[in-house]
Amino acid sequence: MTTESEADTLELPPVPEFGTGRPRWAAQRIHPRRLARGHLTQWARLRAWTIATDHPTRGKTVTARAAGLGLAALLAWRTGHQQPQLLAIAAGTYAITAWRAGRPVPPVPPTEEELRRRVVLGVQHLIGDQPAVFLRDVYDALRARPAATHLDDTRLRAVLLHCGITIHKTVRVSPTQTGRSGIKATDITALLSPTPAVAPSEDVDAGQASTEGAVEPA
Image (cartoon, one colour):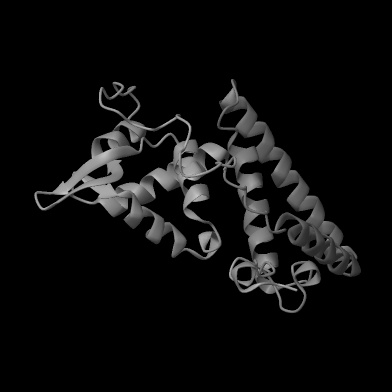
């Protein structure tokens, strides 16, 4: 039986890029947009082959290939004029190749490094122009996302530490708001900067054993 927390994180089936119905079959249907994409893809490949951009002897290669394409077009026109039924076969063959060339490309899943950077960018967005943000506010913002509604504070803390975020025991958000654990803006800027950051001299608990409970791997 699916609990309420699990139901919020269930992923919907992928939406097909072409056609309707079941995702597995809808993307394989002959759809005008897929044929149009395949047609443009084939013409782009033919153009790149004809102009021979990266060929060492481009001038001679372009002349030879253009002459070959012209001769092939002339032979195809004469053959089609003499035997019109071949035009239908050629059109069907081209439609099949365009349909295969227009096959949707599945998206590349993000790497672990990209996911870490997304978490760091999210924390940076929470901090805004302030010098720091309280850890409780970060927990509440993360738990507001559907994928993290079922995570407790311990696991959210493990995610932050896994992303390399330093959690200070005391931060100052404003002159009237201080004395609670949180994340400093300077640490987030250092994580997003290509240059390594200097280790803080004050007492922090990044990488130390958590006293709030056992921390599971993120």
